[in-house]
Image 1 (spheres, rainbow, N blue to C red):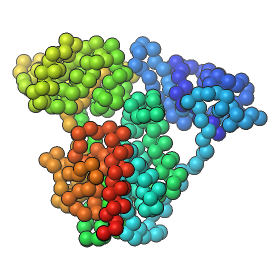
Image 2 (cartoon, rainbow, N blue to C red):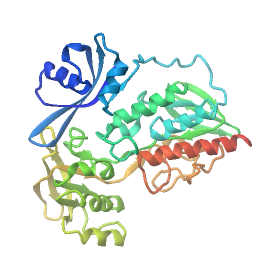
Image 3 (cartoon, rainbow, N blue to C red):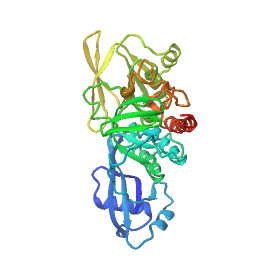
Image 4 (spheres, rainbow, N blue to C red):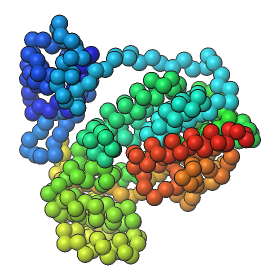
Amino acid sequence: MIRISQLKLPAGHSKTELYHKAAKALHIKSEQIASLQIRRQSIDARKKPDIFLIYVVDITLNGISEQNCVSRSKNKDVSIVTERPYQFPKLGTKALRRRPVIIGSGPAGMAAAIYAQRAGLKAAVLEKTGISGGQVLTTYEVDNYPGLPEISGFDLSEKFKEHALHLGTEIQTAEVKKVIDQGTTKVLNTDQGCLEARTVLIATGAHHAKLHIPGEEELAGMGVSYCATCDGAFFRNRTAVVVGGGDVAVEDAIFLARFCKKVYLVHRRDSLRAAKLLQEHMLSLSNVEVIWNAEVKKIAGEEQVEQVTLFYNKENREEVLPVDGVFIAVGTIPDTAFVKGLVGQDEKGYLIAGEDCRTSVKGIYAAGDVRTKALRQILTAAADGANAVTSVQEDLLTL
């Protein structure tokens, strides 16, 4: 089976046009396509009023070698795939006895699983949602992961998962409710029962704090973003608003100023919490404007962000501001409640751990966005996964 990614067609296209586009990517005739299945469809509304649909499709051919066809295409978005029907994991039939356990299956968890399998540790991965990927799944396009430019967050997550499964990683659907430290054994209470582990790697990540206003959920990924580093380049020569007043919000405004023709920083107070040097840098930029004593109360648009409604809290009035993108930087919340009181945390709930990913409890490790660190990116999360497994290997000699 052949998979083609990034097939781009205008909204309202016909089925015939989709087949023609796929055939063109493979340098064959439409009639030579035996079957075409849409695996994923997303909307690209970055250049309004033009709306496009982006497809990932799987194709079988009539009487043509798929391998030869892929080779001739010389297209990075064309590849051979093997269909693997999803199999629900069998839970409770076999006890996990003192195996290393990885909690979470985002980039940190999957990288750790890959390194653990290569080291012969036979780690088990627990994922509460049953869907691997974490926050990456909500990213329309990842353009800063080395070697994989312009890949969608979904496709990158699938590559992580496929690599881990190829090496024999076992992924189980279970939500960890509590971890109990019994010295050389850790007991994990989950919604599927209890299991024991020699070591536990926490890679549960963090979720972005939200404004909880109309339009935020509806337009997420269509102009509403929580990561300027991830999505800023998509707003070149456009107008964006950043919501927040801390270091991250100011850094986002500075970063966006490289691409956007205009950046508004909206803050509900008359002073910022960000470091003085950051503030001075931002305020020196001619295309950045701070809107003081204001809150974003509503985000609106048809299929893409078009405007926000501001409320000026000292003047008690509202104003509509036309924008193309909204970057929300009001903090992140680490998913660490299940180890509260057990593992050392900072004032925001992040697990205190260094580059070796060791926490305050021997045999418990933290990797990715869940731990204290300066930069939270897909690449740094994956690096944490590798570092954590190295620490596990060293510590298993003495545990």
